[in-house]
Length: 489
Image 1 (cartoon, rainbow, N blue to C red):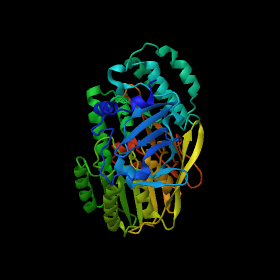
Image 2 (spheres, helix red, strand yellow; image 1 turned 180 degrees about the vertical axis):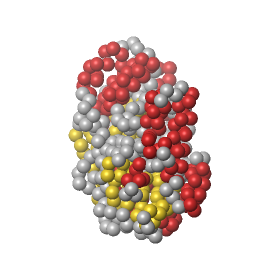
Image 3 (cartoon, one colour; image 1 turned 90 degrees about the vertical axis):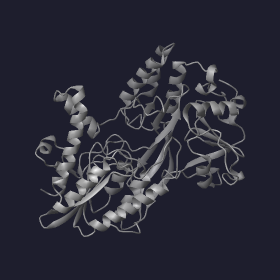
Image 4 (cartoon, rainbow, N blue to C red; image 1 turned 45 degrees about the vertical axis):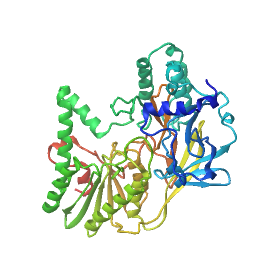
């Protein structure tokens, strides 16, 4: 541990950001960027962090086991300044990329919550010596304080500490990596992951309860005896076949436009949305597929940003699509392979199906095993084109994260039928944390409940009409099991 006053020097701030960010942790600001009312030391117990705001700087500290560690500032000064409210109890930062804010109380001194001082980390340069036990301890305590789902995932966290800590004495980063892999394999939470670097090298440690579509197809390739070199092409071939099979249900004119858009979407960095019209038994059925809720997001880097411009573009496209589909008798909304993104983008789409104000979800935050209520999120009917005819929402284990909060809203609407298999069962947002050796990890700290008080972690949202989301036998016949169920074949 080191003294807090010494650790907050400019040199240490710059050494941290030189390692991992294009932005200085000590952030220069225009005169109007931060109000003087924000100056001071602000502490969020539920999110385990301190923001020290001075005239021209914002410094972020993680709080872990009565100690502090210098962290990367991912919420830049301008974002906080533009999205804060001073309350009777402190500061409310309404994060413009999320549906719930973070509450802070003012501190007179950092030692009030960090009596043990500062945790030595890679930010200290040559003064830092890797210690696997200290890194593990930091990870374990953060999870112990903030993770929301030990009970649901049947994990004895105290036992995890006893099992691994002593054996990590004197071990290497590679050995620690193996321990983290073992622990996360037991947890099977796709939102809880250890990120080994910020370079996008795809060597993160993460496991999910249920396989994604691509993972399932890859496993199919193994079971079919394909070599390692043949497996990725097989997966892509099957994904292409799924798209082609879907297109065969569309009218001829709609099919041509659908396949043209699909080709564009292969390299389109703005969105991956497609749509068309089917005709079945004298009815016209609209089809809309969304593969994520991060549409039009062109943001680079790890700093958070205001997603309002992305949502505005998304909303404009959805308006255009629904105008084209407005004269259909029913709609098939396909989120079977939607890996999530921004909850608020999904909620914006859900508003297109509302006739009155609803409670979309309630959010609580976990702290030392107890849930602390944060916010009730309401949704109003959209001002633009709405679709109020019957809707079939196609879901699968690859329906994940923000796609699940969207499904959580949709499945309570009277005109909606959920078709397919249960969703992935990972509804929490992620809480980012830095480890002393500058590995990074996310954990699931938020507990989402629908308007009826149900939480869908692990179990997922259940279908009203249960069928195989992607029946492989029907796929080889040029058919789609979930679409045929929605069409009442």
